Image (cartoon, rainbow, N blue to C red; front, side, top):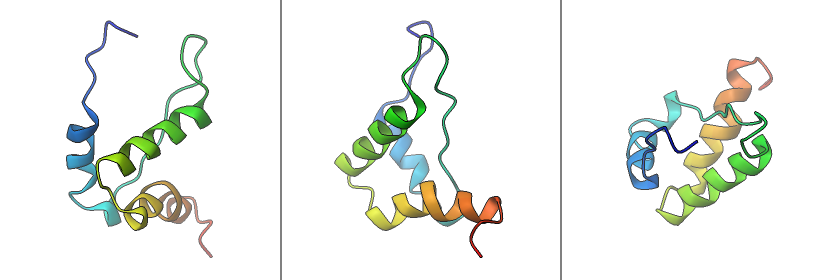
Length: 74
């Protein structure tokens, strides 16, 4: 969707690093012209790793915190 300005991965990672214990990452991908949500999330995680976001922070953002929000962490 070229009509929308995108953050660089470094800009996004700077927000992610503020407090990963109180954040999560989700996707709104899956529309007809967009990548599959799983592929988009995988791509996001790979890019976060490439700019040095730790695996433990990524686990919080995409696993632990969303599970807690949905009550699935018990």
